[in-house]
Image 1 (cartoon, helix red, strand yellow):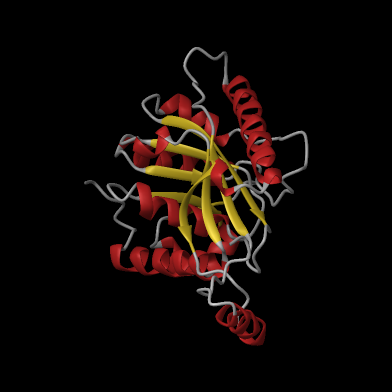
Image 2 (cartoon, one colour):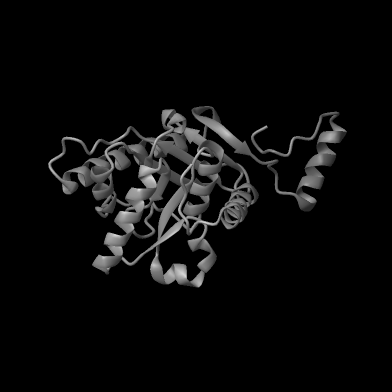
Length: 253
């Protein structure tokens, strides 16, 4: 497998592990809605996700490790922010200054090379944190330039939601949408518009599933022990023992 010489495999593994542990510790469950065919893809992949919060890069690291361990995952990060965390540059994050044309050209060249080697590029083309209910969805066009330069790459939307159901920790809800094709489009603006529509549809479908609060609507990829802990769960445990029942920490059982 060809690799980026700036990417240090040890640092990349440690950063990924830390991010994945954060997901495990801070979320009740990771759940996937809808069609998951993209998880079987073994070619270059551009994932365009909405950008609901701080946890998004950790979500990408979790998915990369779970489903795309045959290759490496990369993503852009604002240059000024990346300078504060220099180790991330060796973990697969690519510096980019959106206001600098030369920086954008450098990112495109590097991203094309990465995709040409069969890796995954995780991006949030909204460019800023945005509430999942905010409409319309407006995306920056960089991913569309990439898709036209690397036609072998699959271009897919990813909807992310962090929401509370019945436990003290939130649910991490995910849904991949149908691939978007840059082939035959009249330009990057058209490809961008197609992804805006696809991401909006994917987010709204995920929202309908989230509102139902029904785990059976999802494929549960990971789940913690549940419960609150402390004196509250001690009391629940005693009541269950007095009734001759095994203690179930989860509130939906």
